[in-house]
Amino acid sequence: MTALATVGVIWLAFVAYLAVARPDRESLEAAASLLRNALRLVRRLAADREIPLPARLPVWLLLGYLVLPIDLVPDFIPVLGYADDVILVALVLRRLIRKAGPAKLAQHWPDDAAGLAELRRLLRLG
Image 1 (cartoon, one colour):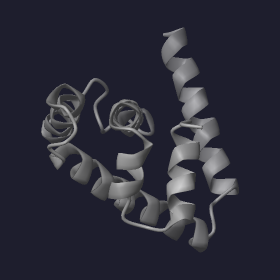
Image 2 (cartoon, rainbow, N blue to C red):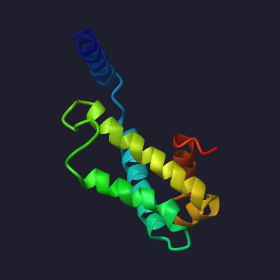
Image 3 (cartoon, rainbow, N blue to C red):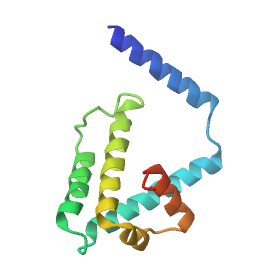
């Protein structure tokens, strides 16, 4: 019961933080653009036959997982429901980029260098 109350308090604090520190419209648009480009990147890297199948296979498994209605943490749980999906996507994308190499990342990135630099920063790719 204490753990549930703790999670509830943390969730309320997070919601309060989001209400106070609402991102501006430009930040939201930049985040949406980065997400769209990251999805294009994943699709392009997963379809690239020059990258070995063992490096691409986790991407296809991830896509299957994301399509299934069953999750590690159900999506109806506020914040945490989608956090597991975001973490899994980041881990798989990071692994794929490391296996494919920086040249493949640059080759398949659909946007400008600034967006690519931001993605590398978020994934901690150096």
